[in-house]
Image 1 (cartoon, rainbow over the protein chains, first blue to last red):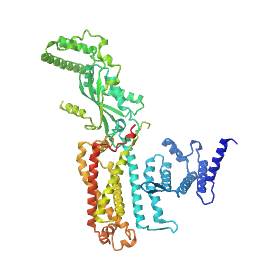
Image 2 (cartoon, one colour):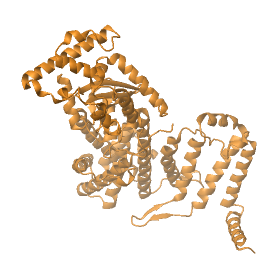
Image 3 (spheres, rainbow over the protein chains, first blue to last red):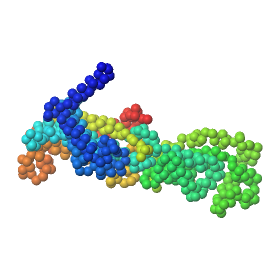
Image 4 (cartoon, one colour):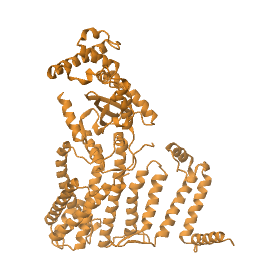
Length: 430
Length: 191
């Protein structure tokens, strides 16, 4: 005979040997009873094609329809199958004992297995959405299974009082089971908090926290960075200033772009950006950003440092020329984008402030101080530093810092690096 | 939802086991010193009492989201996520520590009396125990005064108080030490 066939034959013979009942009253007969009633349940169950377990479907809607279909007889049969399976497994393992070598603790796998099957049947099979309950109830059911045989005599059908040492052992077993149940529950509670506060899914959890993340955080903050870079990084610094002054109009526009980017990345569009400028200096500026999920009280605070890739716009050059010519009033009327009166006022305000600053500077340092201004005219496009930086946009965000904030109460900021605190103080002084 | 972030609170479990073992060892020693029980009985008593107070503490923690103010919940979430305590939480922490300490002593004292009763020759659910007494608490509270070993209630209370003081002191020192070193860091699990 073919050796592989012989091997298979041998294995099959052994399997049959294991599962063939030697007596009528044995675990094998219970096991076959379970298989039999499960087969009957499967036959009587309407929607045979979906799988082996009637409730084991992916989405809750499917599970609902499946449980609606599984009515009457097949439900009873399925329950019987599960009960018989539990009894069979308990019977197989009943004689076995696991002894932990050093501590000398004896474990009975039968009780663990049967209690797991029971809680799994009670909560997972009937209610597919209550998986936490399976784990939480497992140790409790274990405690019941462990204690019941000691205090209830099945032969006489009466409660008996075990001896004091056994009683003490039962107390400790029950309490340990309850502690394990509490630990399971704490796990699920923390998980629920993570789900309730989406801000926690975004930040990189610190390693000294209680929770260790198993997956990467959601890329909301990267999308914030990208949005900000695309919208603001291409503006010149005076344009950024103007953008910030008109933040009531510009932030909703930024939000719209942000939502588009979120949608493109298949993220929830529940997020909303709020923004405050922190400081603006010539090549770069820093911003406070509050991306918050609309529904939850806890949001994020992030400080972004953006380098403008477009340092000298036409308006900028114009402004410079204006300042150095020191003739403000003539140019005032030729505002580059005369769209609205407010905007013109704001631009003129910014300009007059800039001019005052330049005058003060020149008074302090003497006239030919500004090398940037003087050789401004003979600079060509290619030598601008901003053009070079456009190639590596990722490096435009030197170490942005993030932290959690209570929504509507940004003063309550936790988890900040120290330099952020300093910056926050300075903004409060202003 | 695909983008769910799963977390493992392994640190909760390791810290829990460490503190339980420490507290059980210390309290068993104190009970043995003060009440002259057998060592095995002391360990069993200390284990039962500490497990009981741990369970009740967890139950209170699980019910806390229903009555905590938003700001405090935020502090807890922040501590859990980042392991950082804000100065604002210290105003809550000190009364909380007091309540925890005295609550633990009360629970362990009651638990000691109950356990003593439960392990005696006539435990309280025996019908004979209730004759002449109005309720369970009376049955529990009166009985140790009549115990054969001659241990009275104040002795038990004293043993529980000193045992808890020592174990809480050691745990506090350990917590402070853990703030500076990160012994319980499961570095292997970091992605």
